[in-house]
Length: 282
DNA sequence: AATTGATGCAACCGCATTACT
DNA sequence: TAGTAATGCGGTTGCATCAAT
View 1 (tube, rainbow, N blue to C red):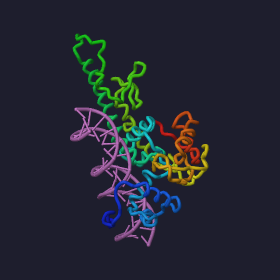
View 2 (view 1 turned 90 degrees about the horizontal axis):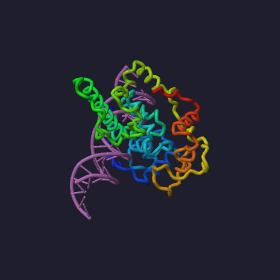
View 3 (view 1 turned 45 degrees about the vertical axis):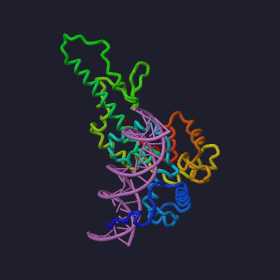
View 4 (view 1 turned 60 degrees about the horizontal axis):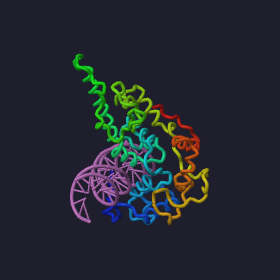
């Protein structure tokens, strides 16, 4: 295959997008869609390559993108899915509505990998200490306060009601409950079958554009201005198809607050999409 | 206040895959 | 069926920001 000339050689712009470029791209896609990314920048009057436009849209400007920090539930889900799927970020992203593969990849490398490492190190320390106690001379008295070194715990570990918990949501670490529990999915014989099932389109239905254009039950839903934390300017009056994300923060929060928790919110989205997913059994 | 190192994240690069002719 | 174009995807980079010194 003949590689397309790079953007610079074509006199195209690279680097961070300006709000003006964002506005041009968004308004063009709203009017014309994005059938052909390669032709899009020329049609829209952008000095960008199609690839750059696609990336900007899919990772940042898309109205159905959920911005902001990852919830603990989302992080736990990523960790579990990563055990099953590995570095298949797009597959993981497909199971986290509103999150992009790029975002998930970043979160994994910046937060979750570190957290897992700390968690495993802590578990190994405890296991080691436990083994040492078991193997030590039975005549050696065991200290009653023989607890893991507090300094081994990072910010990811918290004390609650006298128990030690981690941000991973795992049970308190003990010699009997080591970090190996985190990898049970890959060790399970059914993992491959489960993965195949999860990869099928039936498992998590695709939400098409028409879904977002449905009226959403939020106050003031008929007028959506600005973009959710993305373009950071209220001067722009983008008229996205109605979606929970394109709505203002207040509207979204008001809508989400109707649910007991965030998962119910996303579950409702699937219901609205017309198909009820078979939720993963973790 | 200035410097330095760490961190987070948007964007890019290049290979793989899919679609089209 | 082969060649080409378009798109998808994962790895990597570069820069802005923040915290520590």
